[in-house]
Image (tube, rainbow, N blue to C red; front, side):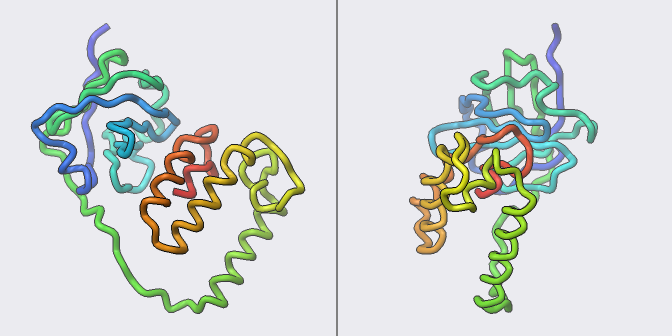
Length: 199
């Protein structure tokens, strides 16, 4: 079987330091219909995304058919990836993603002050909670909002990480946010909402 050559459509600017002439090894962490996460070390991921998705930080948008699923390309969890400024190779999947000349988009966060009062914000969050409890799937992660009424494996697995994530956000503790987020990335069936939607 020959190597499948894919082109990158765009790359997030926060990946420029990672994509250098130095070759870095990674491992395919998780694969979904519209995304594939490649773990470089214990603290960093590169996400390959479908052109159907908006541009995300630390992501490379692929130039593939909009209806093509990334899980159909041949990526499998645990496969080795080789990354540099020119390409990403996943040898076992026989895939090479060309990065040469790719458009770079500015993934710097935009900071602005909200004009919404804390009272209105809290009311809106409570409304989201009520709607999630009324219409959400209690077999999944929506059950973290119900107190102790529903007990399931998803809830038991993520509840402490979600609490830690919320606490980290409240106190602007980036180390706590990073640690809590690691436990949530890739959790779920690859559908929205899934646990990594909290990250």
